[in-house]
Image 1 (cartoon, rainbow, N blue to C red):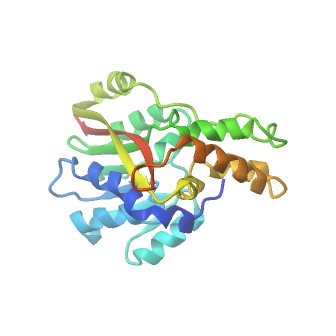
Image 2: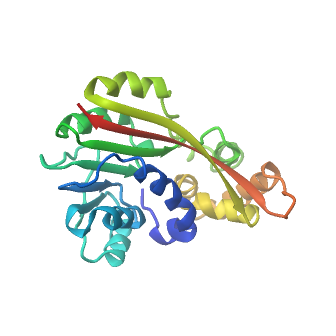
Length: 254
């Protein structure tokens, strides 16, 4: 599936906030090498460069458009295109940092365990993932997907829910000297319902629109937008409030 860096960055401040919150909990003063996994357009990579210095940081992503945007943003930082499901870190890597990527990978708990095992003692795996499939923004995608002539094309697009926090703990804690797990629920004030639609067009809605195809994507979008307008009521200032739960883990290798 192709992604759009420009669409993703329409809400850069809001998307970067959890990246900052994740980085704030990384218990490293210095690092020899850091890899931003699923670096996207480089907004999270920039945070790592600011904290640890240019020489320590590189980025990795599977999408060419995202990597092109990242290279424009940080021309002195090395970025590579790779399949995260198969990739392995170099031995001297001290931090693997992943903001909003592993939720897209089937069986990501196995991948996390493999990556954590590859780190040296004291190395850190820091991960943030959206945990919002039960929110109206994503439930309405499934409702719209079943409601039109695009239904068959959209079958099976819903990504699986994240495992329970206890599942991550049981799998990863034997590999760690410390494992921090937490949820944060962000409440984003949005100008209107259309702004919520624009937000998810950069991520969760994208597979549905691509599956609907050029012949149906506009009708799908209109159906979804009407559902979002009904699901997110006006607040006292005329805006809509987008509730966005996210799951975090910071694992320090034993």
